[in-house]
Amino acid sequence: MHVFHGGFSLLSGIIKCSERICALYYGSASSFRSYNFTENRAKPLIRMNGDALSELQVMQYAFVYFTTFKGLVVDLTLKSHERNQSREFFLATSCKEAFRIVEVELKYFYDALFTKLPVLHHKFGYCSRTLSFIAVVSSLAVFHFGVNNKLFIWTDVVITYILLIGAIVLDMIQFFMPPFDANAKRKSWKLEIEGLDTFLPFVVDNNYDNILLLWHIATEVCYNDPQDQLTSNLEQRNTAKQLSDYMLYLMVMKPDMMFAVCSTGKIKFQDTCIEVSKLFDTKLPELKKKKCCFFGRESGKEEALHTKACETILSINSEVKVVPGHKDEYKLLLFDASVLAKELKLLPSERKWLTLSKLWVELLSYAASHIRSSAHAQQLNEGGELITVVWLLMAHFGLGDQYEISPGMEGKG
Image (cartoon, rainbow, N blue to C red; front, top):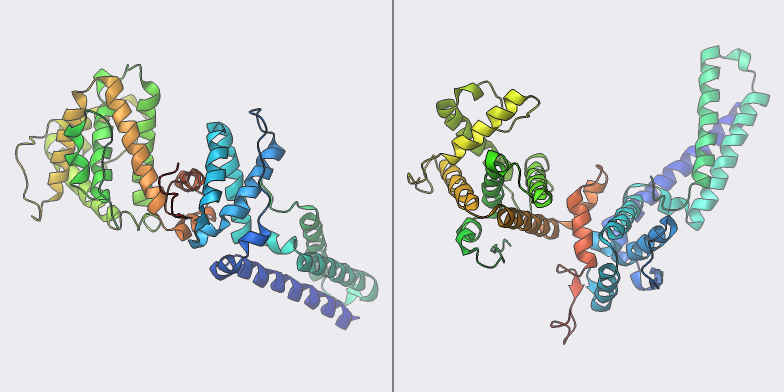
Protein backbone atom coordinates (compact mmCIF):
# COMPACT_ATOMS: atom_id res chain seq x y z
CA MET A 1 0.00 0.00 0.00
CA HIS A 2 2.90 2.35 0.74
CA VAL A 3 4.07 1.81 -2.85
CA PHE A 4 0.65 2.73 -4.28
CA HIS A 5 0.37 5.81 -2.04
CA GLY A 6 3.82 7.01 -3.06
CA GLY A 7 3.20 6.17 -6.72
CA PHE A 8 0.00 8.19 -6.93
CA SER A 9 1.67 11.17 -5.21
CA LEU A 10 4.66 10.91 -7.55
CA LEU A 11 2.39 10.80 -10.61
CA SER A 12 0.55 13.93 -9.46
CA GLY A 13 3.87 15.71 -8.87
CA ILE A 14 5.16 14.79 -12.33
CA ILE A 15 1.97 16.12 -13.92
CA LYS A 16 2.24 19.42 -12.00
CA CYS A 17 5.87 19.84 -13.07
CA SER A 18 4.93 19.10 -16.69
CA GLU A 19 2.21 21.77 -16.54
CA ARG A 20 4.71 24.31 -15.23
CA ILE A 21 7.23 23.46 -17.95
CA CYS A 22 4.54 23.82 -20.62
CA ALA A 23 3.41 27.12 -19.10
CA LEU A 24 6.98 28.44 -19.20
CA TYR A 25 7.24 27.41 -22.84
CA TYR A 26 3.91 28.98 -23.84
CA GLY A 27 4.92 32.20 -22.07
CA SER A 28 8.35 32.35 -23.74
CA ALA A 29 9.31 34.74 -26.52
CA SER A 30 9.99 31.91 -28.97
CA SER A 31 6.50 30.49 -28.41
CA PHE A 32 4.90 33.89 -28.97
CA ARG A 33 6.88 34.37 -32.18
CA SER A 34 5.90 30.94 -33.53
CA TYR A 35 2.23 31.44 -32.63
CA ASN A 36 0.01 31.51 -35.74
CA PHE A 37 -1.82 34.79 -35.20
CA THR A 38 -3.77 34.52 -38.45
CA GLU A 39 -5.36 31.14 -37.67
CA ASN A 40 -5.86 31.64 -33.93
CA ARG A 41 -7.06 35.22 -33.94
CA ALA A 42 -10.52 35.81 -32.52
CA LYS A 43 -13.07 37.25 -34.92
CA PRO A 44 -13.38 41.05 -34.63
CA LEU A 45 -16.39 42.35 -32.77
CA ILE A 46 -18.33 45.23 -34.27
CA ARG A 47 -19.76 47.79 -31.91
CA MET A 48 -23.33 48.37 -33.05
CA ASN A 49 -24.22 51.35 -30.86
CA GLY A 50 -22.82 53.80 -28.39
CA ASP A 51 -24.38 52.25 -25.28
CA ALA A 52 -22.21 51.63 -22.23
CA LEU A 53 -20.37 48.31 -22.32
CA SER A 54 -21.25 45.59 -19.84
CA GLU A 55 -18.52 43.70 -17.97
CA LEU A 56 -19.00 40.72 -20.31
CA GLN A 57 -18.62 42.92 -23.39
CA VAL A 58 -15.48 44.52 -21.94
CA MET A 59 -13.98 41.05 -21.47
CA GLN A 60 -14.99 40.01 -24.99
CA TYR A 61 -13.49 43.08 -26.64
CA ALA A 62 -10.37 42.76 -24.49
CA PHE A 63 -9.90 39.13 -25.51
CA VAL A 64 -10.34 39.93 -29.22
CA TYR A 65 -7.67 42.64 -29.07
CA PHE A 66 -5.44 40.46 -26.88
CA THR A 67 -5.34 37.77 -29.57
CA THR A 68 -4.54 40.44 -32.17
CA PHE A 69 -1.94 42.43 -30.23
CA LYS A 70 -0.20 39.71 -28.18
CA GLY A 71 2.65 39.74 -30.69
CA LEU A 72 3.65 43.21 -29.49
CA VAL A 73 5.44 41.77 -26.45
CA VAL A 74 7.95 40.09 -28.77
CA ASP A 75 8.18 43.04 -31.19
CA LEU A 76 6.13 41.45 -33.97
CA THR A 77 4.61 43.94 -36.40
CA LEU A 78 0.89 44.13 -37.14
CA LYS A 79 -0.95 44.69 -40.38
CA SER A 80 -2.23 48.12 -41.38
CA HIS A 81 -5.84 46.91 -41.54
CA GLU A 82 -5.53 45.75 -37.92
CA ARG A 83 -4.40 49.24 -36.99
CA ASN A 84 -7.36 50.77 -38.79
CA GLN A 85 -9.90 48.44 -37.15
CA SER A 86 -8.47 49.05 -33.71
CA ARG A 87 -8.24 52.81 -34.16
CA GLU A 88 -11.81 53.11 -35.44
CA PHE A 89 -13.11 51.12 -32.49
CA PHE A 90 -11.22 53.06 -29.83
CA LEU A 91 -12.03 56.43 -31.38
CA ALA A 92 -15.71 55.52 -30.99
CA THR A 93 -15.19 54.44 -27.37
CA SER A 94 -15.21 56.69 -24.31
CA CYS A 95 -11.98 57.25 -22.36
CA LYS A 96 -13.26 55.33 -19.35
CA GLU A 97 -14.35 52.30 -21.41
CA ALA A 98 -11.11 52.29 -23.40
CA PHE A 99 -9.17 52.19 -20.15
CA ARG A 100 -11.33 49.30 -18.86
CA ILE A 101 -10.77 47.30 -22.04
CA VAL A 102 -7.00 47.84 -22.00
CA GLU A 103 -6.84 47.02 -18.29
CA VAL A 104 -8.55 43.64 -18.86
CA GLU A 105 -6.45 43.07 -21.96
CA LEU A 106 -3.29 43.49 -19.89
CA LYS A 107 -4.66 40.92 -17.44
CA TYR A 108 -4.93 38.52 -20.37
CA PHE A 109 -1.30 39.31 -21.20
CA TYR A 110 -0.36 38.58 -17.59
CA ASP A 111 -2.21 35.26 -17.61
CA ALA A 112 -0.54 34.21 -20.87
CA LEU A 113 2.95 35.19 -19.73
CA PHE A 114 3.08 34.35 -16.04
CA THR A 115 0.39 31.79 -15.14
CA LYS A 116 -0.58 28.23 -16.08
CA LEU A 117 -4.01 29.22 -17.37
CA PRO A 118 -3.11 28.82 -21.08
CA VAL A 119 -2.03 25.25 -20.32
CA LEU A 120 -4.88 24.41 -17.97
CA HIS A 121 -7.50 25.40 -20.54
CA HIS A 122 -5.84 23.47 -23.34
CA LYS A 123 -6.77 19.86 -24.26
CA PHE A 124 -3.56 18.70 -22.61
CA GLY A 125 -4.43 20.75 -19.55
CA TYR A 126 -7.89 19.23 -19.14
CA CYS A 127 -6.48 15.70 -19.41
CA SER A 128 -3.56 16.35 -17.09
CA ARG A 129 -5.75 18.05 -14.50
CA THR A 130 -8.23 15.18 -14.50
CA LEU A 131 -5.46 12.61 -14.18
CA SER A 132 -3.73 14.64 -11.46
CA PHE A 133 -6.99 15.00 -9.52
CA ILE A 134 -7.65 11.23 -9.72
CA ALA A 135 -4.08 10.52 -8.59
CA VAL A 136 -4.33 12.80 -5.55
CA VAL A 137 -7.75 11.43 -4.53
CA SER A 138 -6.44 7.88 -4.95
CA SER A 139 -3.39 8.73 -2.85
CA LEU A 140 -5.63 10.11 -0.09
CA ALA A 141 -7.89 7.04 -0.23
CA VAL A 142 -4.94 4.64 -0.05
CA PHE A 143 -3.39 6.57 2.82
CA HIS A 144 -6.66 6.68 4.77
CA PHE A 145 -7.95 3.14 4.18
CA GLY A 146 -4.89 1.08 3.25
CA VAL A 147 -2.11 2.43 5.45
CA ASN A 148 -1.83 1.81 9.18
CA ASN A 149 -1.53 5.38 10.40
CA LYS A 150 -0.61 4.19 13.89
CA LEU A 151 2.86 3.37 12.60
CA PHE A 152 3.57 7.07 12.09
CA ILE A 153 3.91 10.06 14.41
CA TRP A 154 0.52 11.78 14.66
CA THR A 155 1.90 15.16 13.53
CA ASP A 156 3.19 13.57 10.32
CA VAL A 157 -0.21 12.00 9.72
CA VAL A 158 -1.99 15.35 10.22
CA ILE A 159 0.43 17.14 7.90
CA THR A 160 -0.07 14.45 5.23
CA TYR A 161 -3.84 14.83 5.40
CA ILE A 162 -3.55 18.63 5.16
CA LEU A 163 -1.27 18.41 2.12
CA LEU A 164 -3.42 15.87 0.28
CA ILE A 165 -6.72 17.64 1.01
CA GLY A 166 -5.15 20.99 0.12
CA ALA A 167 -3.99 19.59 -3.23
CA ILE A 168 -7.51 18.33 -3.96
CA VAL A 169 -9.06 21.70 -3.08
CA LEU A 170 -6.57 23.57 -5.31
CA ASP A 171 -7.29 21.23 -8.22
CA MET A 172 -11.01 21.82 -7.81
CA ILE A 173 -10.52 25.59 -7.73
CA GLN A 174 -8.42 25.48 -10.92
CA PHE A 175 -11.00 23.25 -12.59
CA PHE A 176 -13.78 25.81 -12.07
CA MET A 177 -11.57 28.86 -12.74
CA PRO A 178 -12.62 30.56 -16.02
CA PRO A 179 -10.01 30.75 -18.78
CA PHE A 180 -7.94 33.90 -18.63
CA ASP A 181 -9.36 35.15 -15.36
CA ALA A 182 -9.93 38.85 -15.86
CA ASN A 183 -9.97 39.55 -12.18
CA ALA A 184 -7.05 37.70 -11.00
CA LYS A 185 17.78 56.30 -31.03
CA ARG A 186 16.85 59.48 -29.14
CA LYS A 187 14.66 61.98 -31.00
CA SER A 188 14.50 65.74 -30.68
CA TRP A 189 11.66 67.06 -28.61
CA LYS A 190 9.36 69.78 -29.76
CA LEU A 191 6.53 71.59 -28.05
CA GLU A 192 3.86 71.89 -30.69
CA ILE A 193 2.03 74.70 -28.93
CA GLU A 194 1.53 77.83 -30.92
CA GLY A 195 3.39 80.90 -29.71
CA LEU A 196 5.59 79.12 -27.14
CA ASP A 197 8.91 79.10 -28.99
CA THR A 198 10.50 80.54 -25.83
CA PHE A 199 10.49 77.07 -24.29
CA LEU A 200 11.99 75.17 -27.23
CA PRO A 201 15.61 75.55 -25.99
CA PHE A 202 14.57 73.78 -22.78
CA VAL A 203 13.49 70.79 -24.85
CA VAL A 204 15.45 70.42 -28.10
CA ASP A 205 18.83 71.24 -26.52
CA ASN A 206 18.63 68.49 -23.91
CA ASN A 207 18.45 64.71 -23.77
CA TYR A 208 15.51 62.93 -22.19
CA ASP A 209 17.14 62.58 -18.75
CA ASN A 210 17.81 66.30 -18.47
CA ILE A 211 14.42 67.26 -19.90
CA LEU A 212 12.65 65.19 -17.28
CA LEU A 213 14.65 66.62 -14.37
CA LEU A 214 14.55 70.18 -15.72
CA TRP A 215 10.79 70.26 -16.23
CA HIS A 216 10.09 68.38 -13.01
CA ILE A 217 11.88 71.04 -10.97
CA ALA A 218 10.14 73.82 -12.89
CA THR A 219 6.74 72.13 -12.44
CA GLU A 220 7.36 71.72 -8.72
CA VAL A 221 8.33 75.37 -8.35
CA CYS A 222 5.24 76.57 -10.25
CA TYR A 223 2.95 74.20 -8.35
CA ASN A 224 4.12 75.60 -5.01
CA ASP A 225 3.77 79.22 -6.05
CA PRO A 226 1.42 80.78 -3.42
CA GLN A 227 -0.02 83.09 -6.07
CA ASP A 228 -1.08 80.10 -8.16
CA GLN A 229 -2.84 78.12 -5.45
CA LEU A 230 -6.28 79.51 -6.30
CA THR A 231 -6.15 78.97 -10.06
CA SER A 232 -9.39 77.98 -11.76
CA ASN A 233 -7.50 75.49 -13.90
CA LEU A 234 -7.11 72.91 -11.13
CA GLU A 235 -7.58 69.81 -13.31
CA GLN A 236 -4.68 70.56 -15.64
CA ARG A 237 -2.58 71.81 -12.72
CA ASN A 238 -3.06 68.54 -10.85
CA THR A 239 -2.54 66.50 -14.01
CA ALA A 240 0.80 68.17 -14.68
CA LYS A 241 1.94 67.68 -11.07
CA GLN A 242 0.91 64.03 -10.89
CA LEU A 243 2.50 63.14 -14.23
CA SER A 244 5.65 65.03 -13.25
CA ASP A 245 5.92 63.05 -10.00
CA TYR A 246 5.11 59.81 -11.78
CA MET A 247 7.78 60.22 -14.47
CA LEU A 248 10.39 61.04 -11.84
CA TYR A 249 9.29 57.95 -9.90
CA LEU A 250 9.79 55.79 -13.00
CA MET A 251 13.23 57.22 -13.67
CA VAL A 252 14.44 56.75 -10.09
CA MET A 253 12.57 53.64 -8.92
CA LYS A 254 12.28 51.76 -12.25
CA PRO A 255 15.69 52.40 -13.90
CA ASP A 256 15.73 48.99 -15.63
CA MET A 257 12.37 49.67 -17.25
CA MET A 258 13.36 53.21 -18.28
CA PHE A 259 16.85 52.27 -19.47
CA ALA A 260 15.94 52.62 -23.16
CA VAL A 261 15.00 56.31 -22.78
CA CYS A 262 17.09 57.54 -19.83
CA SER A 263 19.93 55.15 -19.12
CA THR A 264 21.69 57.50 -16.67
CA GLY A 265 18.59 59.15 -15.22
CA LYS A 266 18.98 57.81 -11.69
CA ILE A 267 22.61 58.93 -11.50
CA LYS A 268 21.72 62.39 -12.78
CA PHE A 269 18.89 62.60 -10.24
CA GLN A 270 21.29 61.77 -7.39
CA ASP A 271 23.86 64.31 -8.60
CA THR A 272 21.15 66.96 -8.95
CA CYS A 273 19.96 66.22 -5.42
CA ILE A 274 23.50 66.82 -4.17
CA GLU A 275 23.58 70.22 -5.87
CA VAL A 276 20.15 71.08 -4.48
CA SER A 277 21.32 70.08 -1.00
CA LYS A 278 24.38 72.33 -1.32
CA LEU A 279 22.13 75.20 -2.36
CA PHE A 280 19.79 74.63 0.58
CA ASP A 281 22.68 74.29 3.02
CA THR A 282 23.66 77.83 2.09
CA LYS A 283 20.32 79.50 1.49
CA LEU A 284 17.99 77.42 3.66
CA PRO A 285 19.80 75.92 6.70
CA GLU A 286 16.50 74.53 8.06
CA LEU A 287 16.73 71.79 5.42
CA LYS A 288 20.14 70.50 6.49
CA LYS A 289 18.63 67.59 8.40
CA LYS A 290 16.60 66.45 5.43
CA LYS A 291 18.00 63.28 3.84
CA CYS A 292 16.69 63.96 0.34
CA CYS A 293 15.96 66.97 -1.78
CA PHE A 294 12.37 65.76 -2.19
CA PHE A 295 10.56 65.37 1.07
CA GLY A 296 7.08 64.81 2.41
CA ARG A 297 4.81 67.55 3.70
CA GLU A 298 2.82 65.99 6.46
CA SER A 299 2.55 69.14 8.51
CA GLY A 300 1.90 72.80 7.85
CA LYS A 301 5.47 73.60 8.91
CA GLU A 302 6.95 71.21 6.34
CA GLU A 303 4.65 72.55 3.65
CA ALA A 304 5.82 76.07 4.37
CA LEU A 305 9.41 74.83 4.25
CA HIS A 306 8.74 73.20 0.91
CA THR A 307 7.40 76.48 -0.45
CA LYS A 308 10.53 78.27 0.77
CA ALA A 309 12.67 75.66 -0.95
CA CYS A 310 10.90 76.31 -4.26
CA GLU A 311 11.31 80.06 -3.78
CA THR A 312 15.02 79.49 -3.17
CA ILE A 313 15.38 77.65 -6.48
CA LEU A 314 13.43 80.42 -8.20
CA SER A 315 15.77 83.07 -6.76
CA ILE A 316 18.94 81.50 -8.22
CA ASN A 317 21.03 84.03 -10.12
CA SER A 318 20.69 82.56 -13.59
CA GLU A 319 23.17 85.00 -15.06
CA VAL A 320 26.06 83.05 -13.50
CA LYS A 321 26.41 80.27 -16.04
CA VAL A 322 28.43 77.08 -15.60
CA VAL A 323 30.52 75.78 -18.47
CA PRO A 324 29.24 72.38 -19.65
CA GLY A 325 31.72 69.62 -18.88
CA HIS A 326 32.94 71.28 -15.69
CA LYS A 327 32.84 69.20 -12.50
CA ASP A 328 29.93 71.35 -11.29
CA GLU A 329 27.93 70.99 -14.50
CA TYR A 330 24.83 69.82 -12.57
CA LYS A 331 24.51 73.37 -11.28
CA LEU A 332 23.66 74.29 -14.87
CA LEU A 333 20.53 72.18 -14.71
CA LEU A 334 19.40 74.04 -11.59
CA PHE A 335 20.09 77.38 -13.26
CA ASP A 336 18.12 76.35 -16.34
CA ALA A 337 15.27 75.06 -14.17
CA SER A 338 15.14 78.41 -12.40
CA VAL A 339 15.07 80.28 -15.72
CA LEU A 340 12.37 77.96 -17.05
CA ALA A 341 10.22 78.44 -13.94
CA LYS A 342 10.53 82.23 -14.28
CA GLU A 343 9.47 82.05 -17.94
CA LEU A 344 6.49 79.86 -17.04
CA LYS A 345 5.40 82.27 -14.30
CA LEU A 346 5.07 84.99 -16.93
CA LEU A 347 2.30 83.03 -18.65
CA PRO A 348 -1.35 83.31 -17.65
CA SER A 349 -2.20 80.50 -15.25
CA GLU A 350 -4.49 78.64 -17.66
CA ARG A 351 -1.97 78.70 -20.50
CA LYS A 352 0.89 77.73 -18.18
CA TRP A 353 -0.79 74.59 -16.88
CA LEU A 354 -2.04 73.69 -20.35
CA THR A 355 1.57 73.84 -21.54
CA LEU A 356 2.88 71.78 -18.64
CA SER A 357 0.16 69.13 -18.80
CA LYS A 358 0.64 68.71 -22.56
CA LEU A 359 4.40 68.43 -22.15
CA TRP A 360 4.13 65.74 -19.47
CA VAL A 361 1.65 63.77 -21.58
CA GLU A 362 4.14 63.97 -24.45
CA LEU A 363 7.02 62.85 -22.21
CA LEU A 364 4.95 59.95 -20.92
CA SER A 365 3.89 58.95 -24.44
CA TYR A 366 7.45 59.11 -25.76
CA ALA A 367 8.75 56.90 -22.96
CA ALA A 368 5.84 54.45 -23.31
CA SER A 369 6.50 53.92 -27.03
CA HIS A 370 10.31 53.68 -26.72
CA ILE A 371 10.63 51.40 -23.71
CA ARG A 372 11.37 47.83 -24.76
CA SER A 373 8.21 45.74 -25.09
CA SER A 374 9.84 43.04 -22.96
CA ALA A 375 10.18 45.60 -20.14
CA HIS A 376 6.46 46.37 -20.37
CA ALA A 377 5.69 42.64 -20.26
CA GLN A 378 7.96 42.04 -17.28
CA GLN A 379 6.34 44.90 -15.39
CA LEU A 380 3.00 43.05 -15.51
CA ASN A 381 4.48 40.50 -13.12
CA GLU A 382 5.32 43.28 -10.67
CA GLY A 383 1.86 44.83 -10.50
CA GLY A 384 1.79 46.83 -13.74
CA GLU A 385 2.31 50.52 -14.43
CA LEU A 386 0.31 53.34 -15.98
CA ILE A 387 2.98 53.70 -18.66
CA THR A 388 2.24 50.14 -19.84
CA VAL A 389 -1.45 51.03 -20.21
CA VAL A 390 -0.39 54.07 -22.26
CA TRP A 391 1.87 51.86 -24.42
CA LEU A 392 -0.98 49.51 -25.29
CA LEU A 393 -3.46 52.35 -25.83
CA MET A 394 -1.03 54.02 -28.23
CA ALA A 395 -0.72 50.73 -30.14
CA HIS A 396 -4.52 50.54 -30.42
CA PHE A 397 -4.62 54.07 -31.82
CA GLY A 398 -1.91 53.24 -34.36
CA LEU A 399 0.71 55.44 -32.70
CA GLY A 400 4.14 53.86 -32.95
CA ASP A 401 6.17 51.67 -35.28
CA GLN A 402 4.43 48.35 -34.55
CA TYR A 403 2.70 48.26 -37.94
CA GLU A 404 3.65 47.22 -41.45
CA ILE A 405 2.78 50.16 -43.71
CA SER A 406 1.75 49.11 -47.20
CA PRO A 407 2.45 51.35 -50.22
CA GLY A 408 -0.15 54.07 -50.40
CA MET A 409 -1.05 53.79 -46.70
CA GLU A 410 1.41 56.39 -45.39
CA GLY A 411 -0.92 59.28 -45.93
CA LYS A 412 -4.01 57.59 -44.49
CA GLY A 413 -5.18 58.14 -40.89
